[in-house]
Image (cartoon, rainbow, N blue to C red; front, side, top):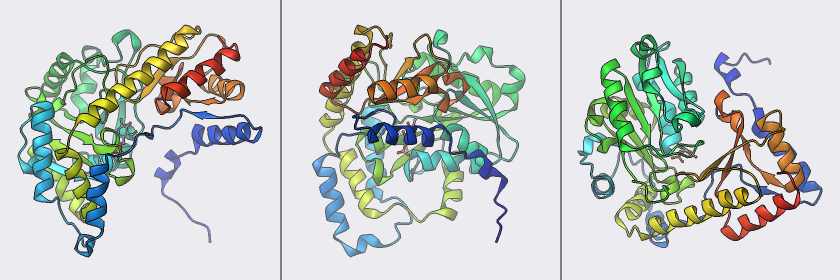
Length: 388
Ligand SMILES: Cc1ncc(COP(=O)(O)O)c(C=O)c1O
């Protein structure tokens, strides 16, 4: 039987990642060690008390029923987390759990946008920022993130006609893949822009706890006016190394959260209770591990960016996130060409910047998923290949 699949499936081409994977296998088959810096899965572990809470809850048969909604203790833990970390007061009806920010960002457009509505997304940006709105038939308009503007959008340069037509705007700092943080003053401008043009802001705060050199770990919701214009996703994936447990929260504007809850109640029966218990343990427990982990990421950043600079590759220091955004050295036709050359000559695998949008061309992204010792080995290997 021949199948006629939905037209939207044409958006999902195998693309560069499958090509990179084939090349990785080919390089490994030659016996060369591959240093895979292409994927953002943390190598740190969840805290023992978090795993213990999950283990204990998983031993209770009562916890295998439909959860339907968040446990009251979980909502209280989120309230305390936002108050103590970011100085933000939330009512329980301003908080909803999702199966990771990826899932949350995939579906939020269904509650906010009709087909044809315009959504502003960053270029370069994390792919689900555009894919989520695209799946609900929204029209994507890119705002540019350029190094000369510190990778912040130049809001004054956005065409007023486009801004007037926009329904929603996705913003995310500390940013993947460009690795900069945004100061509070930026969010003040963003909120004024959103109010002027009546645009809903969806802020993804996946890396607020991986921010370097003493920069402020802030929430968009802590900026006056934010609750009137938008919501924020904040995932436990990277902060607490719970990527596989799939739990994140969307918080902020009450009306948006309530409308989104109505949508999600059609497609979901609540997060597995042992995962909710693990999240409670993570949020209520000691936070020293989160701070220590941030410093460990910073030490990796120093080793990788500083190490590459010492051998002639001008890689700027990341300001936050678990990545490094490095310019492609002169002499290569594209980011992909450089990635393949680096892999074949050194075994170092990174992601070509154009995987994150057209303006990512000219850069590559590397994940901070190796220890400083392993990074030292990477630097020596790259130096020995004399590529710079
Ligand atoms: C910016 C950003 N948002 C969201 C996610 C996905 O988070 P989650 O595990 O909560 O789905 C990632 C994962 O790498 C990310 O980089």
